[in-house]
Length: 473
Image (cartoon, rainbow, N blue to C red; front, side, top):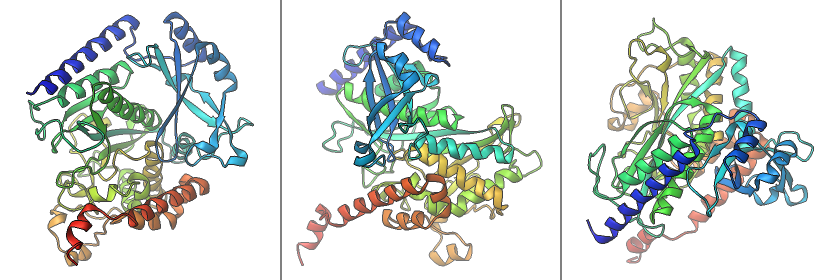
């Protein structure tokens, strides 16, 4: 281990000790605050100095502004105004006023100081000046999709994402921190300590973790969040991504959720486990009679996701770079099929364990963690419920390695593929009634406009590979 690695490891260990002392002082291993009064009392009693209000734009970039404790009570009651025309997908310049209302139930102490201040973060609901909900707020869109659960006698959707990411020495080049591989016990550098520090911070903020480990690629890692209702999980995903990047930055390295940063290695996905419930103790996906222990509702839901996967891919895989991950040979699913053990399929059904009916779920393997989780969960749910409403029939399980099939064999088995490019994904989403209904005309229109601009930008770019190959012409 070189001197730089030794220094970085010492920094990480010191940062971990500071977080442990901070959490011990506050006693905040996850808050359970549900009312404005409880939040106001906590802020006063624990001498919180900065309130960070968080929300996201339509691309899933986290936005934040801070207020003082003295402003908090008024902010909860009256909201805080801001210029919506400067936020991607929000208002035009001539109608730019927006209002952010802090949500007390989302209050969590950040387990380290920011600018020397003790800080608490709260997600905000975005409203129009007349206090009506703002239709382009991703949180509002997910809430609308979740409201449809009641039409089917369902109470909530649980989501459990597995977000992958890379650590690099800086944000200027893809210089990895280790050469370890999948589940390696001793990653040879800093990544393991950074990951464990992030897991500690997540637990401190009340976000349980099920697994964390080194992934297949060098310097690639994964932290799996324990399932939770979809809205809370979307908040947790945004918090998770921020913590991964912030903790890396504070320790002199760079973390990225870029879908495919290394051309010859696996990309980073966000496999997402989904299940629907009728109440807290009744998993609507479970059936004791079915050979896969899937209820008719679960089968129809899966059929809906498969049928509409091409349409929702723009939301679950929204970047030009996303489609460099979705290619055969790098463990990312490309072909639209389902299976129990076959990880080349788009949807996997984890094997049922006796006595674990509540854990019955499906795993969507195509999303990546660079998506907007609010919009991604919304379109996943909408696609599945479309299958339930329409009584879609689930095709047969595909047990063969789909990558090994030739095009004619896939055609005979009616196996379609996801879009091959961002441009193709835009076309599928633009023509989709389901996506338009779920996102709304404004968000879909702005998303299409923004992504067409991204495609055009890359179309005009001459890459180093082109120079190397075509200069001989």
